Image 1: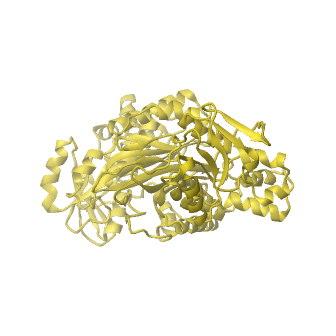
Image 2: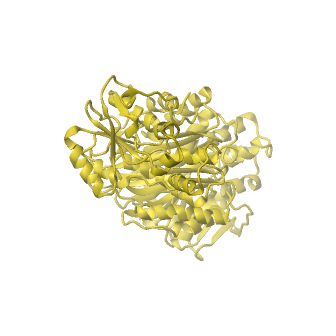
Image 3: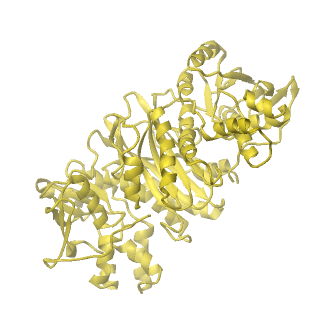
Length: 319
Length: 319
């Protein structure tokens, strides 16, 4: 199968068609229309076999995940996802693998009304690089830089499941098959908080998605906003499965520092707190307040039962 | 050096700053503004070490080339380049290599007034995937699908140098150092025909950039336009260096079928021929008419001294 047959079979005649796509796959470039009074939001995330996922990862889950991690970045900007460019590098054109991978990708694309408008397929070590585009009303994008003293710190859902899934598969923890299945699902099929991100527009003062770990990602907000934070580690939400399978000492490092969860971390001024909680609940998002912006700029103070809590893990590092 | 230091040192505080970039590198996504009455054009091209370039390729040239091949796609759409997302996968954070690579990339970005607005750096086999964004007035994008019977077929400049450069380095041809240097420069520092592409708007009936080879890329136009073509192979422009170093029998396959040249191939209705040639010449582009749209749909007839000419090469294939 040559490159053109591959694109034609798995991408060109699959997935949704958006009205704002004037020209999709099959030319030198795609042509799309950004709605009036909106800005374009662009994000890129690459997944590499053996670095970001196990080489034998279920291809359907991989297709889902490759798109989900990018949609999560758009969510953190408060953007509405629209278009995807896919740079797919494959060691060989394995039909079964491609069928499953593209099915997983088209499923989540359809769910979020996103169209794959182009990309590049090349031969080499398995690498999936997605450039996702979305739109946001002029000036309404959520940034990392807006947190102010006194703002409340929230996360959009439970943390730590993905990390436990990875380490359990490496043999570090002994989970029951049901428990392992539950945490693996969080890693394989993360739910980008797209609706939540749009609800945050105009209410949250800053936002980021938790890909590198709660502490590392909070640090990004603090550095760009020039503020400090205090976090009550016992308020950080974790799933029932984690509480059941591990002790608190075991699961806290995952929830605080492992990453790969793709929940949103955001700050909210006191005045917007009530409105925000009501609006998020309408979308089924149970956001949890875990602390407050205060203290020395750039510093995170972790508390547990009102005492200082220390953690060694620092979050995900590529290099 | 961790990922954040790398981005900060080589990307964040380098390169040009465009006024239409509200938020660049350093958040979950970039935020940019598409001009009124314009559409967004998006293209993606990936370069992989050992597949698309020699592993020891000069990193400065590689930085140039990675951007150039994408700007060439925007040129083929008639778009004005604006923003770049870069997915860079590196086996290690080699400071010297990164300095040269980013210098090459920033040089061409500055020349074309393009800003790197974000991306992702990951650890793995050397892979450079660029997603380039540009803008085009509403409805004015050049497509592959508009060629009509009777239109004239043009290329924007000499073909075959890049192919000869690659094969000479593999030992297939014996070029003088000066000759090798000249053709290597075409491979390493291709000039995307950005101004030419914009001149073609409203005058050309179809366009594509020659990345896979003249015949393969012409075939794309024919397939999407539902027309045929006749090409006089002796009219296909080649550089003086190629004519000097190789016989016609040797260089014609490169000019017709090797690709990697990044000139534009386009079709022009009879009525626009004169205007187009004048306008292109003002931008220093010596476009050459090499044939005409006619004959059976999907078929390319090659002529040499008015006799049928056959060629075995079919153009670049990834899989």
